[in-house]
Image 1 (cartoon, rainbow, N blue to C red):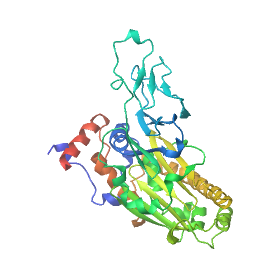
Image 2 (cartoon, one colour; image 1 turned 180 degrees about the horizontal axis):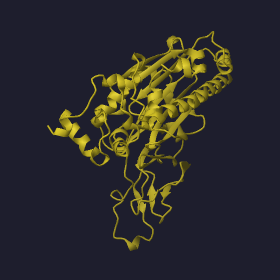
Image 3 (cartoon, rainbow, N blue to C red; image 1 turned 90 degrees about the vertical axis):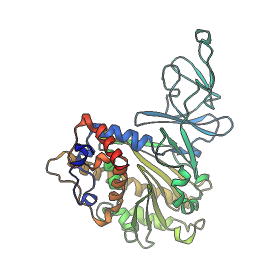
Image 4 (cartoon, rainbow, N blue to C red; image 1 turned 135 degrees about the vertical axis):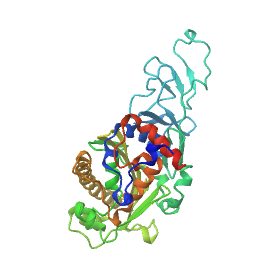
Length: 400
């Protein structure tokens, strides 16, 4: 085995310590993450209800890739790279919109059918004959699961979404998510931290009692996390019908109707389903949402998500959904601050790294998944940036 691989300093209690701080500010590691953690794993793009009619589309720019998801004239949801085959321009410039019967590149006017095939180039006599399939938009791997549209930019280790998500299928299927409709479209915001700091906070409930007074009031006594196994984790709580120290919680509990459309054990449940590497599908009796994060740089992250409701929503459900949104909004703001404080420490010489509680096994097992994909994260001291990719390749070969 190569000397540089054999002599790595890997602490004996590595699992409890989590990832070393250098993993949060290495540009070379980020490039490996973009490919092996993000492009090669399934990502939630939207929900089928975000594309109700033929010609409706959503564009998604993440990790150096541009995705275009649209509904074609036959009603099929399709995914393509948002790249014109002529000069690489965006085929659509907006984040969301509708095209009538074709996609027209805003650069030179090449026209594509909604199934991705090339309809024709502008001034076609200036080109040799162009095959409509060969010069069509490049398709993405795409799969729809319980109404959520998943895409993948490159072949990767995960099997189909249906197979990955099978442990959650029966329980989440009770919510009839396929039939839900949007409440406001896909949202985005930026946060000044490394993406892993966002996931580290979201992967454990140890901090709920101290940092999230509304959640603690709502369901703190019943909340528990389950670790990542096979790329999946789950956090479960049922809200306390006698809670109410916080205004939003008190009114939510007073207004929320009995969720008779759900089995008894889910009628007061707030559940979070985590999908490696970066996505969560969350349900309450009134709503379902997804949220995720993507790195923009080592120190900036794009947060992205969408919230969906029942099509035939009662006034009580609508009011309860609004109050649940207020609770989530406050929780997200609190989490953003926590991620900033934690992320700041990663460049400090005084910070010796995480030392995790047994209650933080969600963080520990997520880090295990990351180390399995990128074994260079096992190295205690920051490797040279110029040799990062080569070292990671050696480590992967050594553990294969």
